[in-house]
Image (cartoon, rainbow, N blue to C red; front, side, top):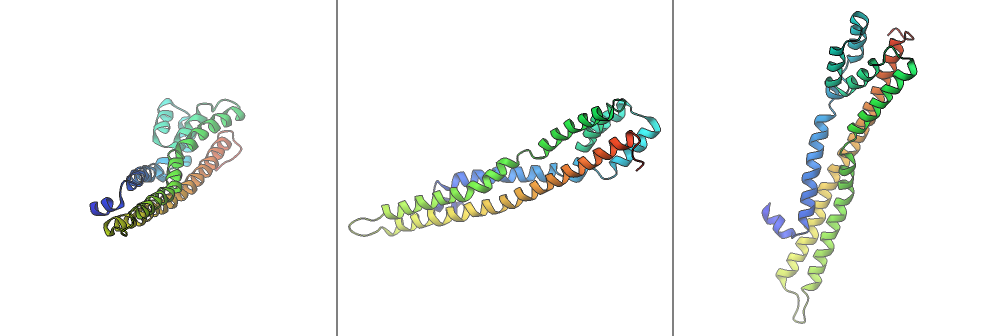
Length: 202
């Protein structure tokens, strides 16, 4: 591996740095966007059952606020459960916007890496071509310089694509995942408001 990096020349280092950042973002988002940490199944039923049996307590609000993102949204609404429907809905919408922003965190940098990695590989290709043409002299091309220029051109192109392809796949996967989670949380929050205000039984 070190031999390949050495053959690729200095243009490979920005691509390696981008790949490390992309791996970190992918790992962090895979962990953060788990269903149990965002919108646990059955949470709405648990909250409604506890509300109808015990009402709203500070312990309940604290538990919801620290449990999951959907729990935070529910807690924001339940803090205003005695307020009019519009006030409760506004508090839920504010918490929902904050949750949606947090879900999409780090995705723009991942999308940027997916977009610029092929360009960085192309830069390495251009530098390799410059090396090739620079090795030309009146007595002919130096084989070692020619080989070095070809290595820079090809390795950087390959590395750029290797970083870009999985980065783009995960970026689109995470974007779709975030959109789905936001829609699901919105639906659950609307159901909570309707149940609290007696417009919906289940």
